[in-house]
Length: 285
Image (cartoon, rainbow, N blue to C red; front, side, top):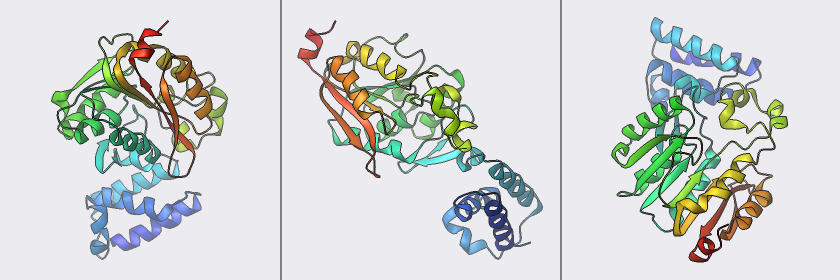
């Protein structure tokens, strides 16, 4: 069987299983199975599939038909132009999270940053890779996620500038930072049933939902972030697209200034940010 024949058969199977984007998924999985760069796969479609690669590809297609996401099958995801390891222990990075990166890079370069609930480390690692010399701390309640973040930090050459901390939000954090970022669990418990199975069944539940109204993490972050920000520091959080006004109100109530709700590329609310000033610090409760 040639790669072309294997690809066409896989596309038909994925389409029959109701998988959207079946052709793209099949190409990505075939490239992974035969260990060829995806952008060079076309050059090899006439090659015969070796038995080992065929077996790997069949297993991958079976997992995709069972609604496992491509990134979790391959064990990697490209984010902001870099490849990150992803496992069952971490959230599969979403393209819309790049909006937070873009907004952070558009502002002043910090000396220090803190990433709350780092997961695979995409926020902290990407920002440190883009900002040479900046140092960061990344925390997570999952020890397994921190292991993934450590490997991603090493892969991208920032491990010596990133301290990893096992912590429930700010519990183990001391000191102040110039920038705090977070993509916390923001899906309400009642919303979980409506999620795509690729998300609901394959991302860690604790990374998706607070088992409440979806705002629990923002209440904690807004209430405690000021004590860990230097004057002039910034807080930036990713949100669900319906949460902009509510999260912005939480930041304002906590003393943040210049609070803004920013859209993603589809025009939906995606990031809320605010500044922490000397005035904010004087008004801390």
